[in-house]
Image (cartoon, rainbow, N blue to C red; front, side):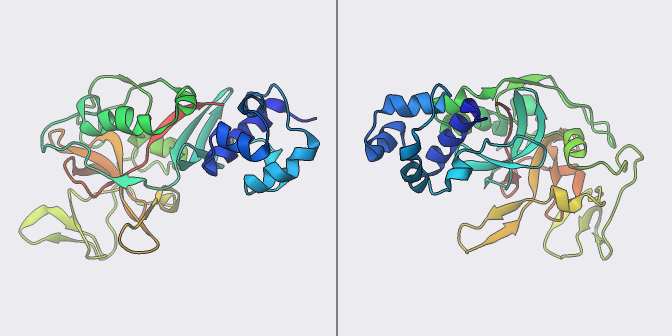
Length: 289
């Protein structure tokens, strides 16, 4: 039996993916925009005779068009201008994170003590980035109360709870949704073979790839590294490459560092300096489904 609501959601997602407004799609089909709205709201289904034309306009098969979007852990869904990975499906809502790094941006523009509550990245995600969604999509983004724990290795305080539409994962949530080897709980810290400390700074670790130096370089490096890796589309060169990405949990030093996931998928509980503008962003949100 066909599920009108699920099919309506699928038509809506496909329409947006192909850049049509309801009015534009209706004009191409020779019907009213109200008819499109009724499909997408699950009130009616397209007539059989119109299905081949609609599928061609939406660049898909009829079977795909009439199949519901599956919200289960690990599936990739389109929403807004990005593709998202489902981390958790919970009744009528799903926790989703962008499948790739969408941009590189500082956690906070000033090199100072800062928490998630007051950082520039939180303001950006909940204003400028949130505003990139159309009004209908914005109604599906749920408010979420966020808490966190202090840094498990260094005791750095997290700060106050917040209520957000768009947010970053915490260190504990990365372990929860991408896999937990128990190394954080057991205080097991890793260095890569070939890593070495800078001779005049015992707290500065040069990674074995020789490309960068991360202060206080201990990290969690385990069997879940590949799951935590994220790609970023290069601006000046074709293709994709791996990028670090911010978490909202505090790092090691006086609250001016924040936890990150490294290019190899390592979990740097020690963090990176908040003003670094070459760390990636993977927005996360709860979506009404």
